[in-house]
Length: 67
Ligand SMILES: [Zn+2]
Image 1 (cartoon, rainbow, N blue to C red):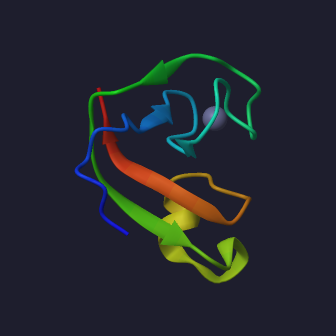
Image 2 (image 1 turned 180 degrees about the vertical axis):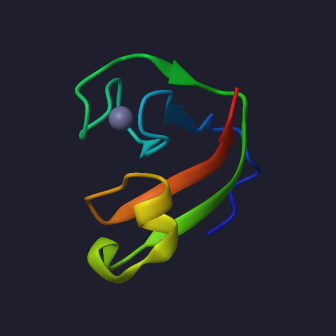
């Protein structure tokens, strides 16, 4: 599904969630960053060490590094 990478993907600066609209669905904030690297897909936050480390409680895609 690569379309040339023209669509800018932003992530939430608060919780690092990959955001597809104008605001984060977790925090409700529009404090988003386009400067981020790498992401993880959290499917089962309750049983994920990464999710616990990052304080993630909802499944979804999250950036590893956000500036
Ligand atoms: Zn957020």
